[in-house]
Image (cartoon, rainbow, N blue to C red; front, side, top):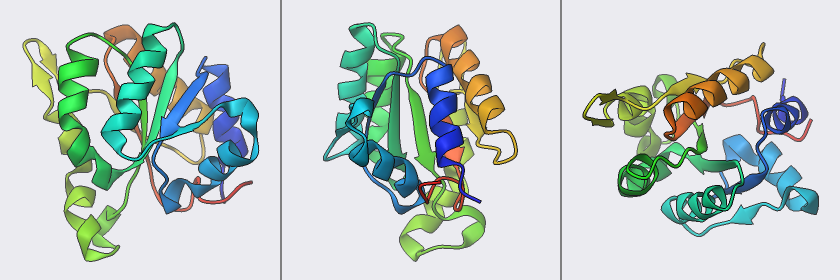
Length: 172
């Protein structure tokens, strides 16, 4: 059962007030709400790394940002994540769809689906061992958002909330 409304409420409850990203069908419920309700101020970007850059600027201006993307976009984001967000301690929530989860999807999604969590674990620098990530629990949406937000805020780095199919792909 889709949890879009519950998810958006959890983002607001945790202080998120700036949203950017690139659409994905697994996140279409949220993106549709962003498009239909101008109050969210969603900025649609042409590439995932551009969305991260836009969100970093918003963060530096005092906003709390969330960036939405398909996991295939993580590949183009590695440089932005490490040379902008990590180096300059710019926290952002990366809401990323889990295309290719369990080896089920179109062939172009299978590799990223398999390495999703190790992607974030592998981003290290000095004492920093990996970036925080959490899998969105459809039975505890608010708890998932609160947990990853706490880790992001404590460490001052970006972190990921990984979203499987069926949770945020409809407007309810």
